[in-house]
Length: 508
Image (cartoon, rainbow, N blue to C red; front, side):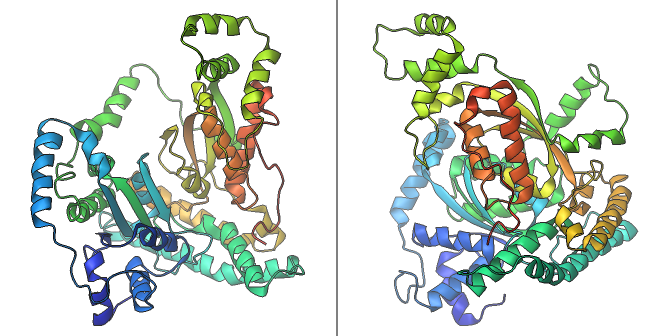
């Protein structure tokens, strides 16, 4: 949204650019920055528009008439000299962890947002597909797709959005007819729930090129690593975004991130591994039967058979007296019965409150799962970063998920037609541009990812993502993670707070 001169003047002291899609925030209370980023989830407007509105309404506690950031000339120069000597010269990079950068990153694709959110030591808020209805031009163009193939790409994206926009009101009307408003529910809350449910059912139509906005908060050390990684990415859009992030970050921390650059090791890593793997293992030809595992979206790859011992050892060792040593304790636990070990673990969780995480001792053991899920669900679950993820590129080869509810509502046909048409365009692009073809794949198409996570994180993923308010796609993944984990760790039953129910209108 365009801003008038008075609005631009109000926000100028707090943003590094009035025009760039990527800019830094400064000179604002931390809680204000948090709420501005929170608006990304539910607002159609960009951050500068929301900031101007808050300043105009005098809802922010900032000095009236301020037109410039405070000047700390001598202190700034001394800080830069210190960082040049100790951080750059002597490698004390941990110092950079004390400098925090807030970046607003707007009008980037969902594909690119996944690369940005790959940073483990970062905090993000992203535009939601549940609360925001996208318009027909809400996708990122790709200059690298030239001529006829570029025209097909743009036409496919526009057609997906056209179908999506046509189905949103029709789906809302059908949901209203099927799910009347309950007594005590306000009309506004009911409408919001209906709209969210419709958006949930239709988000599979959105292409991975869909424009999104996100707020990123990270320390300078982590941010420099992320920017270097993105500058080494084979996708041009991600490299362009990295350049914008670096330029914006330099306005806040001109010394601590200035050496972010393309990393040749990172850029060649995948190719080096693939070349070596060709001497060890040859992948079989593509088999359409690979999609048959749709009824097994979560498959166990490996686990620790002595998981109870590992957790009990960590629990017992914490707070023990110095005469006790790990070898003796471990030997004693090896002779304990499974029931005795389970009793130790259950005792550690007995008084766990509704918002308490399991003790860190549960990080002592890990499990590895292969997940096959639609890209929309992956987009949500990818934000869990306290794990080791390995993810394949997005394709249309694994088929797509078509919500059963659309068939029940009599609206499945246009959805299916749009998904098949998008697949045809994806195939045409994939033949010449396999990486860029990801942008043409709708969010309903499936992707595979390999997760290795400790049991503490497993508790967190299952309990958070199986909750009633979650999207049905990732709720199914969380529920299946629980069921599969129980097959090898039955003692988890009753300890993990999982919601195994289904809900017709989760947000009502």
